[in-house]
Image (cartoon, rainbow, N blue to C red):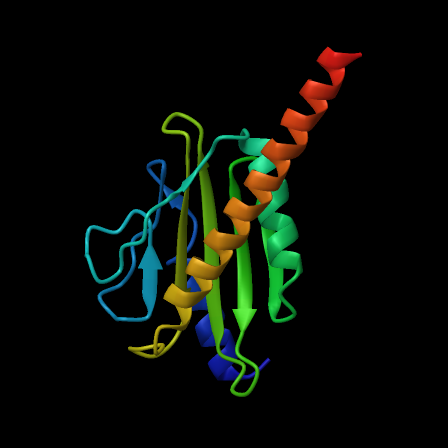
Length: 154
């Protein structure tokens, strides 16, 4: 591992994870988006938790596994951390999800480890993941409705 990779890895450790029941905040740079940010330039809406924590975790893990440049680092009951690597320069972005059962929301953060701007990569990634998440949820709910309709007609 190069010195740059070691420095990047060490600096990311203090910026990821949970603190006081929330994801750690974004830095002041323009290469981070978070559903818990108070900065309007970094803010995106959290995902809703309508199908329960376990099913939502399954949806997100499945979505993340479909990305060729993603690696799931941590998968716990209420938290997921994945790393995304850019294809050319191999820059690493940290993507986190926190399942807040009390508020029935999935909070997330996507942040580049280095640089000041990401040209919208983190924002676009989280919008894409959000769309895929809601598609999974909709498909699941439709399947459950069909199943319950089938059960009541027999």
